[in-house]
Amino acid sequence: MDALSVSRRAASPPRFAGGPVGVVVAVQFAVLTALSGRYGFHRDELYFLAAGARPAWGYADQPPLTPLLARLSVELFGSTPVGLRVVASVLGAATVVVVALVARELGGGKGAQVLAASATALSAFGLVVSHMLSTTTVDVLMWTVLGLLTLRLLRTGDGRWWVAIGTAAGIALENKWLAPLLLVALGAGVLAAGPRSVLRSGWLAVGVAVAAILAAPAIAWQAAHDFPLLGVAAGISEDDGAGNRMLFVPMQVVYLSPVLVPVWVAGLVRLWREPELRWARALAVGYPVLGAVLLVLGGKPYYAVPALFLLTAAGAPAALRWLGTGRYAARRSAAGALAVVGAAMSVVVALPVLPPAALGPVLAMNPEQGEQVGWPEFTATVAGVWHSIPPGERAGAVILTRNYGQAGAIEHYGPRHGLPRAYSGHMSYADWGPPPEEKTGPVVLVGAPGPAADVLTGCRVAAVHDNGLGLGNDEQGTPVRLCDGPRAPWPQLWPRLRHLY
Image 1 (cartoon, helix red, strand yellow):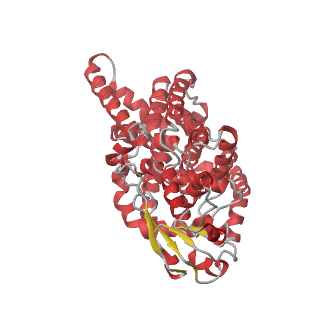
Image 2: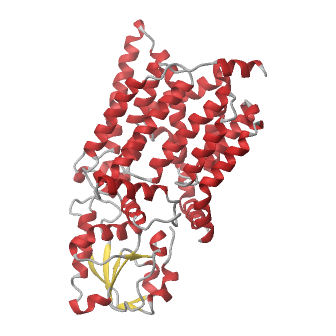
């Protein structure tokens, strides 16, 4: 056993600051809960509700975990934004705790742990994914857990941690297929900076087997359906890849907060320079490797944000040292003022604190705010067109939407307007089936016609949605057409209407 292994195994991290970190978590959870019903569901949340009502081992664009969490949350707490978002707030709180534990793992004491927890809780990205439920909410937690477990493996040299890493990776793969990117990046870091001995452990194979077993149901479902998830990823890369590459570096500065950039940069420097953290250099190498991989693939810039949380935890002790004591009072005052400004900006950008009509400037930084506004009114617009169909013809009529958000809104809010379920060829709505063959009557076509223009007859615009706020979200100005009917039976037309992106 080399000297590095002996010192690494002998090292003991500081005591966990459970009390102060718990206060940070409690405040975060209280604020998120108080604001969780301020606007309404996000389009993705409406889709998760629909998917959770149709449990499966997979969906066209995702594994099953997030829809199942959505179903669990609304069954326990009610089918409202507040009820759905309980699970998001819990996952966000767990992420804060894990980042504090990462700071502890990297030698950070009470102050560093609280700083890391507070930075995570108040970061714009952390607030966005903790406010509303998304696959990213789960993914951020699982990536930070994988980072913590990997650091524990590297620090202790105990190969049994591979089993825990494999378990976390398997759970992550039941939510999204992005976790391997982090593991590949950290693996490259271990190869480049060590300690390579952990890669020779027999427990590595056990960890891989555990991950494969846990992920097998989702992989089997995707295989049985020709891997639509890979088609979605390819569509993102093809359509948005150039923009993602161009925005990658600027968004790394913005996503947490510009105020926190010096902290995570200090984390990179600290991991590389401090001899006592030599065992953790893989993380310093892993982040740029991850960035390079995402640039090559054209992945979305936010995929790398969980790694920034890990680096923020690494930089927290250095930030506290820089602030110093005594004669550095001016430095601390300036940093405190910047922290307040940064936190206020994060809250305004990420959480529903403004009146919906005032969201215009915010949408440039966080368009997801706008996607939580106007769905009941949108459904009412569709209902107006539906009820213009003569009562005797409605039994054979169909509502067809362009995207899953529109279909999810009609599925959730439609019953109060007397609407039937909506059909869509988008994502898993396509897998949930076409309208029955006997539905040969009028069609309410919601959104841009797309391929539907070639399979429907006599379409004319019957309404244009206006949310009444002048808010330019994705559904503002959506046309709703009334068509005479389909050109052929729906099962025959359905393959032409399916689309993943």
